[in-house]
Length: 211
Image (cartoon, rainbow, N blue to C red; front, side, top):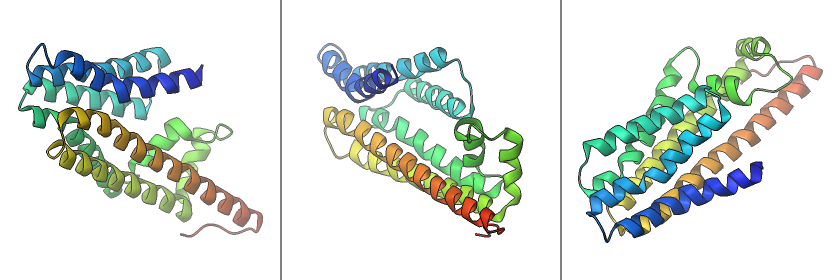
């Protein structure tokens, strides 16, 4: 079932906007067709949240992105500006990640705490790890990488929005997003595992990660 939803997610987000745009472009204005093309991924995201019935930190980011996208759509604008509305949102999230580095705890710490913390570890145990220097530096680096990655994605898509045909952009844009998201996620999992293994080795030796 999980594999089915993964495949369906790809179909909706990769092909949905392009297909809707191609079907609608000949029957309405280009701007209206673009607005309509945003319906499949938005409805899919809302459906996923309703189905999972979970409202963790990651879900809140998704909801915020949907709401901002809807507001941007309602404000209208030229077709090219409509293409970059989600890129601006992605850029804002990237700045939020980087801005959280100035907070007592960076954003990735809270995301990890609510979504990917070790199932065998309680929230209290996870939070107590913040007192370990190496634990803190791990989340500061992850937050930095995610912030920069989201800004890179936004920049690439904004450039493409003004340099390639609209239909081509609707096909290429999700591929860029998935490529960067999976790259960031894959790196985060790999790096997190490396740091955890290092922590286990040092714990066995009676030492603590200091960087």
